[in-house]
Image (tube, rainbow over all chains, first blue to last red; front, top):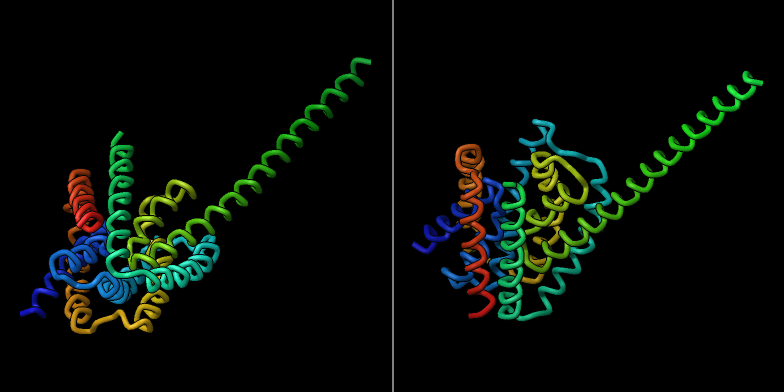
Length: 122
Length: 150
């Protein structure tokens, strides 16, 4: 039964992710709030489950020639160093603090998205 | 005398023109340098967010690509995946190594994400309106509030 419920959570996150609205920002709070999954575990599950979907989406976009390679290394290389640093920061803090930080991050992100939405509408 | 003056005027305009050209080229160089800085900032911020929060990098990379680096929206979405993929693989490996991954959760969720992702990609053109995004933002903010306070 639990297995099925987890599939439902993945489905919800996957649908919104596939629509380009950020799957992780749905899946992580969903797992944490309604399933009681620890913050670190929810984040790990999100990262790993994103990989196969991203590969499929990337092949699709490459075929449609939508991917721009200009300056890609200048973005990706500092990105990889920064994400290693980020992983160590996440490991250093407790699940409770990490969850609160994530909550703050979600609020900032949604406020920013709202501003963008209304700006685009003008 | 008149003729000499004409030549002088001609060379002067040419000089000014070449100067303008030089300024333009310099501006291009400055812009490209600026874009390099933006590229590094985009990568560093996306990476840090990806590592600390285990997701959400795409919501940072897409606006940074469109607003800072003036990329097209559709292409920015596609390019963002190419940027996030190596970040998620790296972060995923570190989370695995730190013992945070749980297969009992990860396997069913992973199956759901793949199936849902296909459904979402197919529904994209039909459902994505401004109001869907706005409702989504409000729900996201409420979830964030709950996680922050309780």
